[in-house]
Amino acid sequence: EKGHPASERGRGLMRGLDVGSGDIADKITSKAFKNGLIVETCGHDDHVIKCLCPLTISDEDLLEGLDILEASTKDAMS
Picture 1 (tube, rainbow, N blue to C red):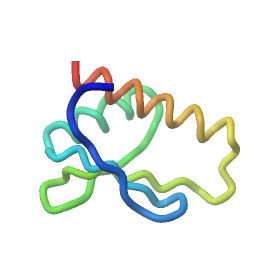
Picture 2: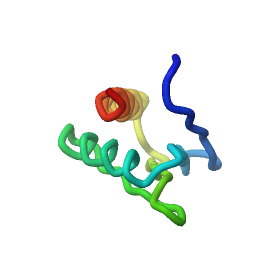
Picture 3: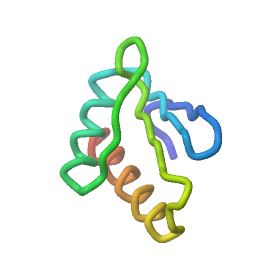
């Protein structure tokens, strides 16, 4: 989709979403928290959203978390 450029990085289930701005990352993580998903920011300007999933996560829980993150991102960018 068109919108703000972001890039993904990491290995395995340790992933980060670089949104380029600490302000944007803060909006996304705040909205995600309000919807039941705990994610943190990291990077020199807190511009990366850090996702650390447990190795034993079920497919259902993973998809639910990704849905929350996606909705939070769309909401924060609108």
